[in-house]
Each structure stands twice: as C-alpha cells, then as structure tokens.
Length: 215
Ligand SMILES: N[C@@H](CCC(=O)N[C@@H](CS)C(=O)NCC(=O)O)C(=O)O
Image (cartoon, rainbow, N blue to C red):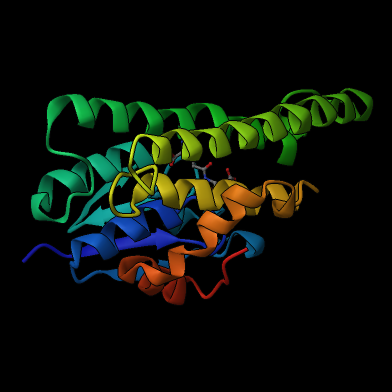
C-alpha cells in the first residue's frame, strides 16, 4: 500500500495539498516541519525538499515538491475525489487559477514577507515591501472579484460546486494578508465566503488538523 506523508507547517501553503489529501480521503501522515524553529533547513528535511520549503509529499520513499505538482499527482491518484475537474477545458482553467495563485499571488507575498531576497540594503528592502504590499492588496481584490465572477456564473466556490484546492489557496492568501497588515475585513464579500469553509467536511478536517481558525 502506498504510504503518503505530507510535510507541512500550519498557516502556510501546505494547507493546499492537505486539503487535497482530505478530499481524497486517503490515509496519510502529517509531519510537522516548524518553520519558526528552522526545521525546514535541517539536513534531514533538506534531503526531502532541497529548497527547504513546505509542502513536500513523500510517496513511499519518493519526495514530491511544488504545490501544483503535488495537487496534480493527487488528482490523478484519486480521480473520484474531484480534486481537479476531469473535463479537459475545465481542468485547464482550474490549473490556470492554481498556477496564478502559486506563481503570481504567492510570489508577490514572498516579496512582502522576505524583501531581503530582492536587495541587500535596508532602504531598498523597505521600498520593495511597500510596493509589493500594494500589489498584494490589489491581488486580494482580484481574488474577491474572481469569487464574484464564479458566483455570477453559478458556482459558489472558485473550485466549482464544492470548495477545493483553489479555495484553500484563497484562504492562505487572506491569512497572509493579515500578516502584511491588510485586514481581511476590508474585503467583506471574500471574508464572508471564506468563513463558510468550515461547513465543508474536508475543510473542517484540514482546519482541525492544522489547528488554526478561519479568519
Ligand atoms: N513554489 C513552492 C512555494 C513553497 C513556499 O513558498 N513555501 C513556504 C511556506 S508558504 C516556505 O516553505 N517558506 C520557507 C522558506 O522558503 O524558507 C511550492 O509550490 O511548493
């Protein structure tokens, strides 16, 4: 039997594959990698994820990294769970949104949280953070607009009829906004929608496992 281990840290993007695992209903081990304690930079963990990040998914002794790849793998392994749509065009659109979260929204937050990765001096770092924070706020507006558009098209969630990986990413992004001083309450429509996530069974399990409340 395949042994699945998700290497995760509460409050981070590892919530996205955790939600996928909960949708799959597959037994898995959740291995806490505490970023605040630097556990992602230990030699043991670097052997799993050479970049020293969460998430990673160990499939027996093969270690998968990158959210998009992990979600794609789980969607393929558990087709009945509808982690990604089966219909090719719908699936491509869901992948486009997942990649937008990962490559655009998440990366912009990276510059808010770690501007030292962009410049060595404090003044430039401060300027990077200010610019990235404004860009990130605009991206949160776009997430809210995407919810409105989905709902106008008849789907309550970004992932469609049921909340899924795209909604899990939206939740992470709103949580990170709070860390950047961007109040979730500034986007009441988005906040109200995310607060309903606890009613979705897979989310309730993932939230309980993570141990963090909804915003
Ligand atoms: N592109 C990566 C992003 C992963 C990432 O940024 N993880 C963050 C947590 S949300 C992390 O581990 N940060 C610690 C670090 O980079 O040192 C993915 O899709 O897995």
